[in-house]
Amino acid sequence: MSKSTSDAFADVIEWAADQTWSNGKVGLCGISYFAGSQWRVAVRRPKGLAAICPTDSMADYSRDRCRHAGILTSFLKWWFDRQVLALQYGRPRKDTWGPDTIEGILNDEELAANLDDQTVDNAQFHYRDENYYASREYNLENIAVPLLSIGNWGSIMIHLRGNYEGYRHAGSEKKFLRMITGRHDLPFYDDDQVEVQMSFFDAFLKGEDRGGWTDGSRPPVDLVIRKGNVGVNNRDAEKEASKRRFENEWPGHWHGHSTRSFILRRTKVYQRRSRTHEAVTASLTELWETEITGYIVAHLNVSVTALPGGPVPKDIDLFLTLRHYGADSEEIFYTGITGEPIPLCKGWQRLSLRHVNTEHPRHRSWLPHRDYFESDLLPVLPGEVYPVDVEVWATNVVVATGDRLVFEVASGDTQGIGLSGHDTAERSVEKFAGMNHIHFGPDYLNYLTLPIIPPA
Image (cartoon, rainbow, N blue to C red):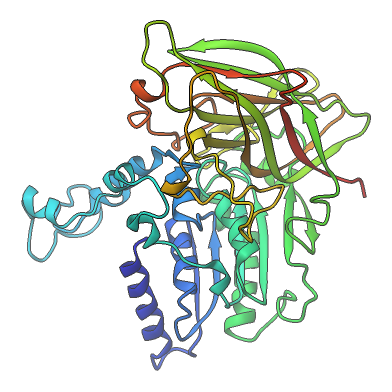
């Protein structure tokens, strides 16, 4: 994800487009890393690049992948050790694919000298205005080629935000957003998904449009609507239950008009280690089915106090989860990226980085914009109550009559994180150990703003 890697990628695209066996048009297709790299090479506009299709991918290196609202993710170590470190040039292959390198096996000193460890780098650097992150930034508006962004509602911890935000900000005249469900890998290879991808590329690489991609007849947004309890990691059941709906906008016209704010009330407190977790609920018990599709913001009033005999706390990390319960009071789970059971969606916020840049052109009431610069750091003093608006990643669900949603506020990872939790080493006792509080009352309204889709 470095600048040099993206520059090299651009060179390869231009080389391929110039070969005698090429028609001069290059398309990019892939998932995860092989999707995230597409955004950043497309902004360079290499000669010959004609279309991109990033599936289940981050678009923002910091916000979508490395630091959730300032909080370091632990996914990086799992990914880096398996996908990069184990295959580093100069290591013996052992049981992995491929021969040893031409120069043979390198010693530990040589391997270390040749390695930039993302795990180390991300732990060392915290802010988007530091050179490490700044050198990886780019402007999505500079993407001009046709785009098909495929996001997965189940990627609640690592990729989802990149697909819908990448689509929203890309400068492409022809751009499309398609949502899917299921594991990270399997849907990419489904026959119907492959047909969509091939149809897209045939239109823009070969001039053979059988899907309405070029003439404006195909609506740009293709949503899959989640309804009912179809079980977890059951691909056949998910596909059978899936209902698709085309829209002309993302987010839809309902944003700012049909959002509803639900007042949160305290329901229980439970202890975990040295920190307090609060659970609060917003019950949706309607006389009709209610669809929620789009962006979510939570408004909370929080403070921290020291534990008896403990150090003075200096910050709070907020971990938010929206959970879905059926009328039978059993929780409804969805399929995560490795087949694990997950809730609807999650959000995070480091309180010292709560500053919102309301002047930024990307700021919206339904998506507060934070720069996460070092200059944005604000104090967190014990006993002081701080109001904060927290971004919760977008989601989709149809809540049936009698169902309810439970909104959970915690100070650490809870269920549904899969492989993508958060690094606890950075969250030291000296800085974070304390009693976290949510304040309720006439002067301290806490609420959750949900995008309610009007009935057809």
